[in-house]
Length: 320
Image 1 (cartoon, helix red, strand yellow):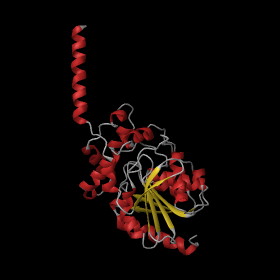
Image 2 (tube, rainbow, N blue to C red; image 1 turned 30 degrees about the vertical axis):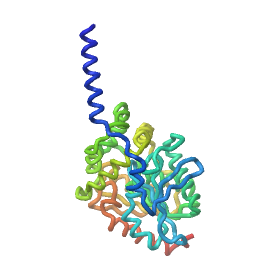
Image 3 (cartoon, rainbow, N blue to C red; image 1 turned 45 degrees about the vertical axis):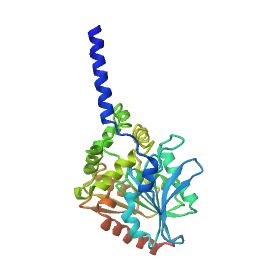
Image 4 (cartoon, helix red, strand yellow; image 1 turned 135 degrees about the horizontal axis):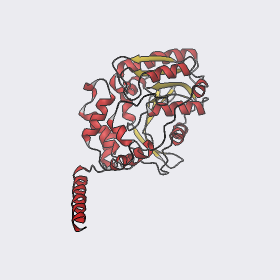
């Protein structure tokens, strides 16, 4: 018994030392705001108690576009798009709850319903009644959900490698998301998220490896470690995934554009085909050289596909 206790004590000591060596602490909020929250960033308090980091750019009387980032991303994923769009459109993007400089939600609720409610709360706070709504990955699923619930507010919908399609086979990447969805391991990830893991996850997410720069890796890694974001990630991945039904999507009657990377390993391009079949009159563009985040991998071609399509939408409907 004494020998067993001694062995257990040694193992415990090894685990404690390993934890201390591998531990990656939270980033400093003030330093992160100074680095990623510079003008035109705003920190806006919503009625639900959440203070949201957002950027609102372009003419105030122009047609509005709201951009929703994906899981473990932030509003800067849309930087190139914003620079192209803000001359003609009012471009609104924000860090969603449990992400970026918004950080943890006071109510601790990371259900799809709360993410969806936040879209309307941000639009209300900024005085925007109708808008084009675009989302990537998780943000695409939220955008679709909001459009179903509030079709009167969504002038047009853009789904970029969006969540919500049924997946018949397990996704091939990325390792970070796999670990976040693994019980037990996801608890360790609240304290241990080394930079190399984030870099590997990003490289598994994109098709163009040259686009994964040190600055990009730093941004994803540092904002993941913003206080509360890692616990929020674990809470989100602990929830069951539920795909939309064709009947739900079939009720969408606003113009819908589907943009997808042909080499998406997280949500294969078959998802784009499924969305197009389910949504009446939707249009689809697949980028041969992109993976899961075309707006960062191929900013020029992807925003051109968007603006060409928006020109048709604007010509067909008043921009109210």
